[in-house]
Length: 285
Image 1 (cartoon, rainbow, N blue to C red):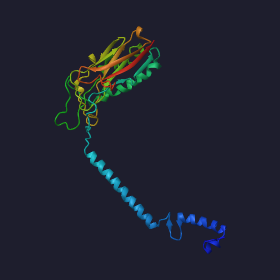
Image 2: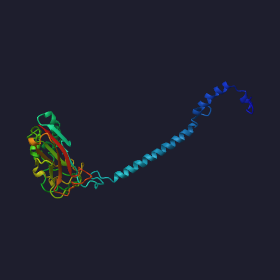
Image 3: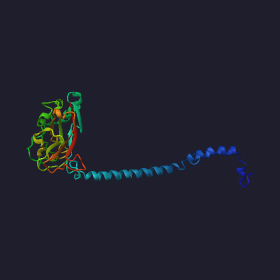
Image 4: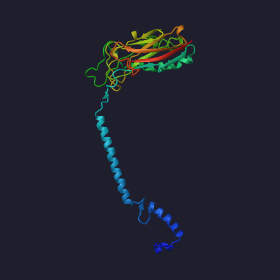
């Protein structure tokens, strides 16, 4: 029955094959006779580990060297590339593009009042003691001998008048004549030409008051020199007080505000926040 099989294999029974199988399987993981682990000796594994250790250390060194060389080309005070944002965006406070409240219910407008008060904290006189009273209508340029640091111009909270939260802590929300604050986003080196000011329009016209006078951004707050050089800088603000009447209550009005009077862009169809902003407001009686 063995046929052409070797005589030694013919003398082995099926039980002998079963007993040999586990031994050969275990030897493939660790062979006690040769000391091999997964088919390799300890010396072979040591050489492989040493190779990968040297290889990855080399890669890490190349990465660190590349990062170091790149960091040498950067300036801590001025970004290397500043040509992608030619004009600033316009932002609003309270930080919402959909303002709706009941003027008779303080709980309905308290969130807006808290947001405005929190935002204006850094405009308090106590927070700006180190800032300087600059010359209105003139750019505040870095003077020779000042080094890399730049003095920051003081923006007094009282300039916002009835929307400052000083005389009216509810910012007009309790009487249905709410205030919103507008500011331009910071761009290093920006020097807007002309006399930039805020102009807001509504499809159903309502009366508005602007603070400071005529809603202007004074040139003395420009240019901005960066967070590190201009450490105490605060953006100039324009407050808009919306004088709703009874005929305007319970209606959702879309208000569009733009920066006019300068070379700043405000009509780019690809960016609806570039030099302008649109928000909705509804006052319920």
